[in-house]
Image (cartoon, rainbow, N blue to C red; front, side, top):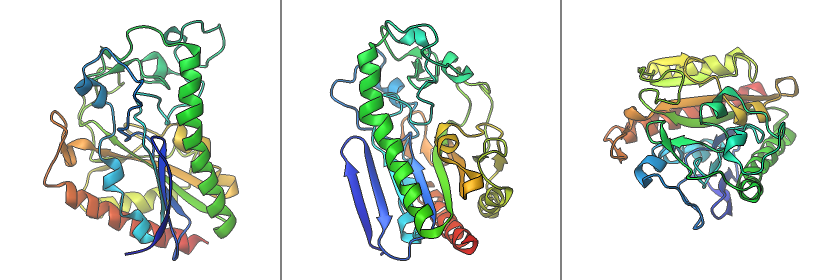
Length: 289
């Protein structure tokens, strides 16, 4: 078993960095946290609140430090604040006293899945009973969102300084079918969907390496079909400077019962395949430097 250094900011992030045989590869898991601060409140039933979390993704990828890759996990839930959204991607109607032009809401936030989610459960259950205060929004940004992104930035910079290049994967899970707040509501989804910002956040060889490995295991793999990638890859990618980022969505129905949140017997198989993916990508990254 490889040794790794661990950096832990309780309730915010956990980072594991290999001590030796490290490679220029980092996996970040921004939407799978389940540590709710004691002041978090929602009128929604807890099962609806937690249905929006990318459940167990950190466990699926927990072996990647064994392959020399850095592993970074956001401990807080995306229902508190979504680290995969831009800091300005806010529906002003959710914030008491928001001024005109203060935010830049995207289609996502207007559908209720922005920085501060409006809905949970099946995509129609209100997450908040009333608009939150500006102070509450600032607390979520300053105490959770920015510390996570700053840690991701610091690790990317560390690897870039050491190796000259960095390959970054943002790890997510998606429901087996789109919920009511999604553009693909009710539609069945592929096993894995790779997002490269429609060609903006990494080179095609990085995408192909991921797709080929997962396809060889027999999975149905698509590219930019369901999710082309959001803030975690757009904020940190800099292809011209040797920082390439892509997003991987794994279909939750492969490894868990979505209605009960129970892991399926297939969980360990999917986990072993993602460990093998990390091994393949570590070799890919090492070959590039």
